[in-house]
Every structure is written in C-alpha cells, then in structure tokens.
Length: 607
Image (cartoon, rainbow, N blue to C red; front, top):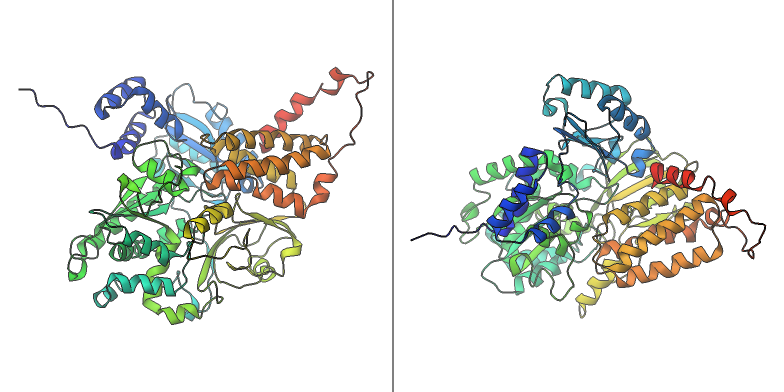
C-alpha cells in the first residue's frame, strides 16, 4: 500500500523559499515546480507569493547580492559616489548581474541604517558609512575570496542620549527574568490591569491602548493563541527597534512572555524584517539561553501552566507587511496583502486564532513598567503620554542616532540636542508622518500634541477608534528626519512619493494608481510647469486614496505632501505657471526637445 507523503505546512513556505534563494541565489523554474508539488499549491499561486517580495529573485542575483539604500538621507550623503564606485568595481550598472555571476547590484529602500549613511547590504550583511574607497576595498577583498561576514560588522547602536538615571526606561541594565519573576504573585487579569493603568499605547505609531488590546485578546476564548512581535521596522528613517533588539534582545523576550501569560498564548513569533537578518543569530542564541534558564518553555520559573516559546520568522522585503493583517498573511505563506477588517487579529489572527500583535518598543516597555512600578512610570513624561520615547534621528544634524527622551520635550530643545543644522523641514514619523516647519518649534513631542490628528480613545467604540488611528500612520512613531534650508523640498517629497509607488501592494486601485498619478504631478512641479489645478488635483486625489485604501500605506501615503503644501506654500507657488489659451505659434517639438532627458534625470536622481 502506498503511503502518501504528508504535505508540509504552508507556514513554512517562506522559509523554504529563503533556503533556496540563499543556496542558489535565485528560485528557478524547476524549484517552483518542486515546491508547488510539495505544498500542493498551483504554480500561479506560488509565482504570486515569490513576485510579491522584494528579496526573492527569479533570475540569478549574484554570488554577492548587493542592495544599496536609495532613501533621501542616503542621497544627501555619499549615495552618488558610492553607486558609481560599485558600478565601476563590479563592471555593471545597478539592476544587473556581472557576467561571471559574481556580483548583483540592486537598489532598495531604507534598510534601517539612516544614522550611518551611505549604507548597503551584501548578502544581508550590513556595510555603513560607505565611501568610494571603502567600496573598492570591499569588492577587491571579496574577489580574493574573503568571507563577506568577516568584512562586515553589526551596525553601531549610536545611543546619543538618555534621560537622568531615574527616568531612563529602555537603555539601562537588564537582569534577565527580573520582570518574569514578578508574575509569581500576579494573575493574568492583574497584569492586564497594570498595563491599562500605565496608559502604555502602541509605540508603532497607532497609539492604541496596549492594555485594552491585551484584554480583547484574553477575552476571546480559543484552544490556541499567539503573540507576534512586529519587528518589520520598514518606515524610512526608523531604526529604534534595530537598536533595541541588538542591545536588549532579552528584554523583548520577557515582554513577549509576559504578554503570552496575560492573554493565554503559548507561542510567540518575532517577525524580523529581512534587512535585519544579521540580528537573527543573536536573537536565537538569546532564545536558547532563556530556555536553558527556564525563562521560556514549559512551566516558566515553576509557574503552573505558564508555557511560552518564541521563534524568529523572517520577512522578505515588503513595507506593507508592517500592517498586522498583512504580516499574518505573510506568516501563513501568502502574499502580504492587508485584509479587510471583518475580524481583528485579537479575534481571528494567525491560523484563525486570537493573535496579539505589538511592536518591539511596546513589548520592551512592559517588563520595565513591572520592574519600576506603575507609579514611577506615570511620573515620567506627560499626564496623557507617560514614560519615555525612542526616536531615530537622521538627516542634517551633528549627532544622528537613537534618543530616549521624556515625553513632553519641546521640539526646539530637541533640535538643539541633536545639533540640527539650520532646520527648515522635518519629516516626523517617517515618510507616512507629517512634516514640521519653524512654526512647530514651540510644540511638545507628546502623544497628545505632536500627532497628525487629535484623536481620543472612546471605550464604547474601539473599532471606530482603530479605524481613525489607522489614518494617522500605523508604521510611524519614532522617525525624525531633519533637513536644512538649502535642501530642495520637492526632491525630498519626490523620494517619499516614489517609495509609496513602489511599496503599494496594489490590491487597492486608488492606492496603486493614485500614488502613481501624484508622481506625475510632482514631476510637473519639478519641471516648473505646474498649474493651480495640479495643486487642487493633488488635494482631491489624496482624499480618495486615503478614503479608499484598506491599510495605513495608502491612508498615509500623501500625508507628508499635503502637509508640505500647507506649511510651505511658497515652494509650490513659485513653480506654478499661468494658465494660457492654446497658441498656434506654440512649437511643441521644440518645447519637448529636452523633456525626456530632464524627466530621466529626475527619475534617476530623485524618483
């Protein structure tokens, strides 16, 4: 009798694809045939998954696959010099692979190293502060057979500032298990009540009350529940979670275990963005260490029925997977597309089970609150936004890096702290956040003040609150990019727009098409031949994109542009030409003689 081979779980699909990608440097036609048969899925479905993610390749990507960061902070550093050096040393242009299949050159969006630009990944090993000389040395040594791992170093943490010792929350010594041991005297309800009392809100940018989210998950009964740590830190300019995981991976594990204890989950996942692959071994070694010490596993610290384990799940390059439903889709071996909110993850999430999703900073805050006590925590920061906040600083400043500040600091004081150089335009909360001008310098950095919208939580209608908060920016909450007066605002906005055009999953037509049309409008301003109607169109189309998009990407993709139009109207007005009737004497051929050349230059350098 023939024994049918049991098909593998689809949740392992992305891991299988990663294994093949790393081994062969691409996923071949034959590989796809074998995988589709193994997983009992169609080739079309498999093709859809592979093509969705940035870092899977259908053609050979080179023995050494190089990804150069092309975000705006990189372009303001040594980007052009570094790009030309790579092309010269490798012998091909970006987007190509050398004839000997030794090197593949590719561009990518922000890789979480904005404080150390210009940066690149080579086989997902980080290289920072690049120059032409450094590039020449790296390629030469790789040609000689040196290991790429030996040439790379884990990026610096660059922790620039913490409050006074009694008010520092995150970046202080961590004694493994100190918070977990407190659970011996606390039941799950007491833990949730404490988190609710702390007023801790989601630090990924949505600012949803953490304790309430935990309660929703706990109240949904099921035979299995999950905790997912959102470590897909893809918002350009943000790198605080990278530093937290590098500095205190154990603190994150404690936070996840406490969350599991509170909601009744036994399994946790860290969804780690591919760009942080160099942290995977460190995190997994810490997981093993925690298991050995009885801080993870069965009956943790002798507490009956406190069973919780953690594993790392690798993403493959998709900004939209930072949205929790898209992340869950990805973990289930699907395209990482956001789902309609028929059910929230705390109701039906991963594998249809109640699932709690929090980001790295949120989970790391919980054990600190238990350790210091909620009263002390509430005495730090502001009344509505207690505690401290981690901010990733980059751009035109003397001291880029990570800042742990007490909520309530004035923006002008923060600019002085980071050594901002003639600050004029600030992207607060990344590409999906709002822009700030000199008119904002007297404002405070706090949840109740410096937010794109003033929204208060209504306990009688949490679903409506969640919908509104999605419009603020689900991926923001920690990025601070400052630009001096001599930077071209339109070029910055073009870089922002291009990011959303490329990262849109395409499932919502207004997002997919609308952001592309906004790109065309921005080109008109860059060329200096825009009309007043173009400004009106941008405003109207942005409303449609925001209203019709199912996730935060589309809902916030034009936030910075609209904000800039409001706060820097003179930049746009100087590019507007008067509307005139068509003239027969107008020479169209002459007018467009250099058009393609100019547009190509815009696209190459800024788009």
